[in-house]
Image (cartoon, rainbow, N blue to C red; front, side, top):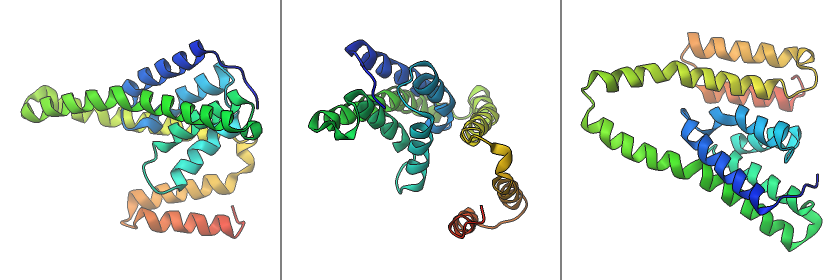
Length: 198
């Protein structure tokens, strides 16, 4: 995929991720639906495949899952250069894309988290602080569900993947009703995928 980006586009990318940073309650992954809307649907800077691959790779890799933001920026930079075969210019733009998106998603939320946490720690007995903490739980859950739905519907025919739906429902039920460690369920899902059963 090849796109053309001006300096105004790069600034717009930074500004969008600065705003998303302040909405990333529960982690950057909760803002994935808006990232998809902006990067894939509105701007056409990424394809659906690049978007979902960035998230899947970052979730599978060791380390913080926020790396999917860097991968999205990397892909935007590569697309702006005409692809990975465009030489050193492509790699420089890919690094710039990763830096812009990571700076945008990390800076405001880090500053806000630091100052709010210090204030909340000093005022932890206030009723408003306790109510805020309690009220944020359903919001975070709803944002995570919307991200999961977006990633699920990215396939062309979700109804065809009934095995994935069954596995997801079974895993959710086991997590909810038993004390089986989540890593065992992830390992079982990986094994079923490796065997080609899902």
